[in-house]
Length: 434
Ligand SMILES: *Cc1c(COP(=O)(O)O)cnc(C)c1O
Image 1: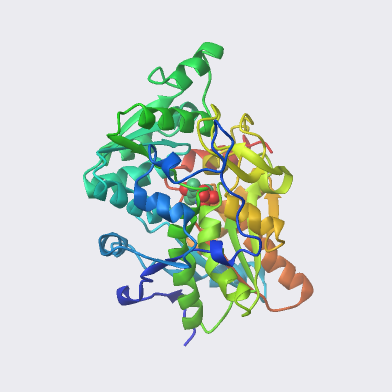
Image 2: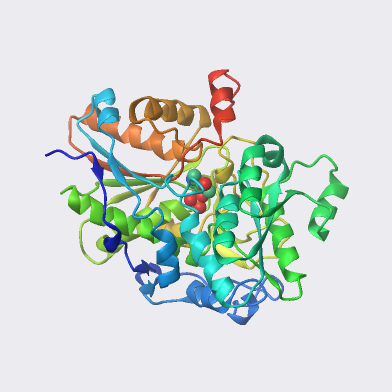
């Protein structure tokens, strides 16, 4: 029997997250306090995050238990399917076996609820009443709005103004889940007012929206905290549910990837897929090529320096050592809004420095071309972010054909593109620029 879908039963959902930090060859450089530039302490983060998440951010334990209440929510759509792209393989006339882990089955349509749910849960347990956050394309905002609705928390989202107007349905989705959505820059915060004073027509940026959300939490008098959808260690750890499931599913397929691929904005779906496979390699087991794919218009990993930098525009966040284009870098308004971030996760950056991963930058029209090929063969319209992974997966399959060799390719299809059809319309009309 040659299967196409590899479905795990609910009983086999992994019950721990994997923390790669103790397995990193050179460890992680410490985060620094934005004011004193001294190594950050757990207490420094208390105004922003609940104790449990701070503990996870600094944790050196290899495994962390997933709380039962989080598993209960995961079970609504997890385990996510692993699918072999047989029709795509055939269309490419490639001897490669191409698999994708499909995260678009979550209620928000992407992998982001994998971390939104535990973040909302730990905040709820700590007595927090409201979470503030930013969103670019709207994927993270809808995921956190969803998670807050599960645990009865209020949710305040600062949405990059460009997307606020371009993606009214993402905004409507957040509001349906009960969130309050404000276009950023806004007049509600000092950071927003300063940006508007400088440029009244500013369409915003992710870095600026982060400044607004952080400021709103800091000024809440302790009732609100802040949540971040990518980059941080605890976020990547929560996302390892993806790769742990995928490892079990590759076993069901009696196969093992030669190459694992993910689109990289802040690095969380990439890390989530890849880290459990690197664990096998770092433990002396099978090796794997890991490829992080970013847009050539925002190439933090391929072109950015490995330096200490802020996570936001105003410089309110801790300094982290990461691949960065600089916290005042303004990425052009490409359609993959979730990949328009100046920095990269410290964990992914450290893996790059240790030569444990490859980074590739690709232009957006080549990505949409791959996304359309994928949709016409596999029937799923990829999110613009996810088309970056699709592009490189297709290139790997074509390279296998060229070399006349078998090759097993695995990538995360991090989300569907049902809220992003304007991007496809623009692509078909020839309006996309590289
Ligand atoms: C947010 C997002 C990304 C990029 O974020 P990472 O943290 O790098 O995973 C990729 N794909 C989708 C669908 C997203 O929503």
